Image (cartoon, rainbow, N blue to C red; front, side, top):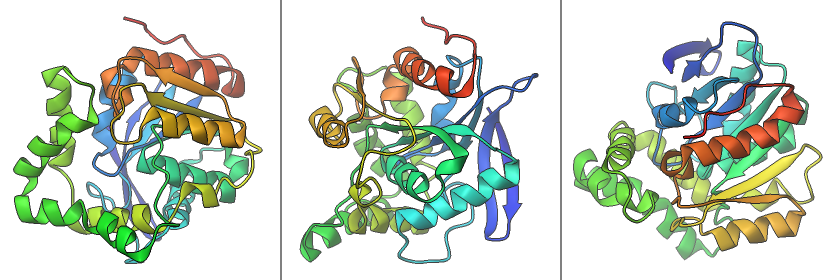
Length: 277
């Protein structure tokens, strides 16, 4: 996936793109709180029929951080909308992983006309209804450790938990590499959003836009039972990703790609089937 940059009124928005020689249906990929655009590279090989756009969220990589020190998911969705408009993306399927699912939910609530469908993958649901002490604990639980431990130690301790037990060492290294790019200020903003907002506020009823929930069946961060409960509460379809932890699209990219293709193909038009290996 090629690294690119788009200058918006709110600042630089950086992303990676896997383009196609002919016009192709578009999947937009939103990473989680401890990750970045580069984390989707392994998945990209299994989605040959799609144009893939993976952003570095505001405050990640070289993307300009949001102006608000204490942003909500709606603030990230506003940047997302400006980026997609700037790229001329009229319709896409939006895939939000973990914290990215909260951003995707906010985009669904505010800008449904640009979305043919939404996938909430291993969704973080937020702590906005928790008491003040819990919200403060969640807010400080990541970026303060990164600041105190440094990127190397933090990544070595944290990365294995995002994958299944016995994960491929190359996949652990991939997760560590993305953690090594974290910016403390952007990480702290994202932590604030996780602690003080909640997905349910944006999905108060069954979404009008087709929406799918998927989750790795070995996810230790956002457990599958929570994802299933979310899907059941909203009347949404649910799909397990077998032998996959929280970063299910890294642990099981072929299965994850098949789930995306099954969902997106009828919404966006014909696309080549994913490569299953």
